[in-house]
Image 1 (spheres, rainbow, N blue to C red):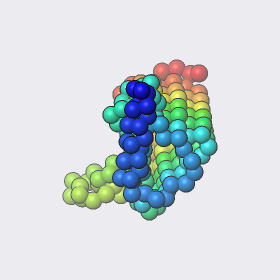
Image 2 (spheres, rainbow, N blue to C red):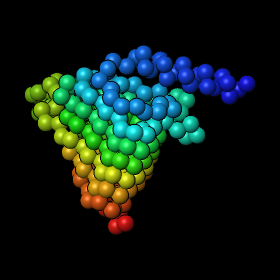
Image 3 (tube, rainbow, N blue to C red):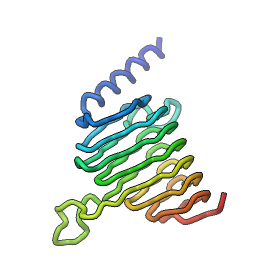
Image 4 (tube, rainbow, N blue to C red):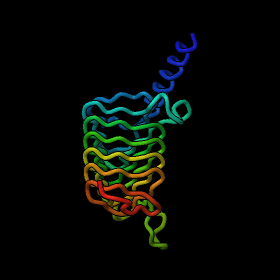
Length: 186
């Protein structure tokens, strides 16, 4: 009986966030094990076998995945066979591309913009230079990772838990730290 009520609760939460979403430019199919909120005016594209949320993981019952392609020209593209854990956010004013076979831990954030101009005289204006984020194929991103604008991560790389990724890295490396650095080659 308890499982029945848990399923009903989870379904109602997914419907709620679907109702609250304001972006109708979502292409492709995905599995939303956790609620997903789509916002913005840009495109959100999902490949095959894209999964949001993990039941047996922190933040499943009390959070959601936030995806915002903020401007009409912005896009967020998820490749094939992607598994994204709970409480993640992806916000784009330019473009975020996530390759195939990528694993993303819980509470991760990716933002391709500073969202406000860093010039003190223009602080209330939007970032004049958002920069694309590219996550290569077969990348494993740990929990609590933040990826900032202009970052490219090469294929087969691993980003350690808690990393703050402020610059690009090549393929086949393990990176970690604040700010992130190469810890070793794979």
